[in-house]
Length: 254
Image 1 (tube, helix red, strand yellow):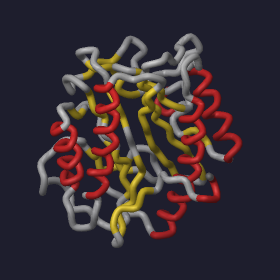
Image 2: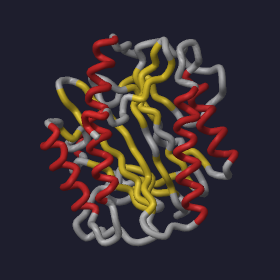
Image 3: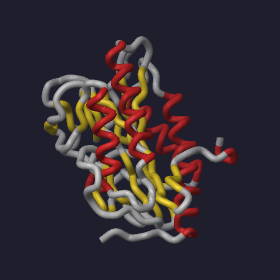
Image 4: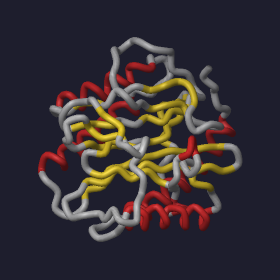
């Protein structure tokens, strides 16, 4: 069941989203060659404590860390480790959420480190652009898969594939709510979009096949063919004035 949020609830989600984005910006700046993924996770946790929020993922369904860090062919849910060092040429996907006062926020970005190949830069750019193509369709009166199709169309136009095993989702008082938001679909299909819906729209895009497999840790998803993957996400409210990105930094938190 899709829960519509009131204007007050959306304002609370926007406030939390701004804090999430402010923390995230600092974490992104911390990512560089030679840093371990555990160091990044520790830094994210310290920032959560500083800003007075809880890391949404830590302990969620048993996940052991504050932030998901997925490198190169890792699609999503990579677990930070002390002995996993970031290297020059890596592309690093960060997926991060926070919780406060009964509300959740969620966002993701893929960061190039040092000198990155041209195809990986194209992959990152296409994934980021696809996110905003999807957000453009998050308007009252559209269908859910109008978002999905916009993402898929842009990704495939650029020669890449959208992951199908993992999808976006509703978000609010739970980290994952209805509806699921696939990154593939047919325009004009799915539920009608209404003001008050809040969605985590998150293209996960592979350079090769869209198929994935799960590593032995039970969490980390990798591409089935070993090619690279990128991931971007925003928490977005559907309003009568158009889509509102809630995970953007307000001046107060910059």
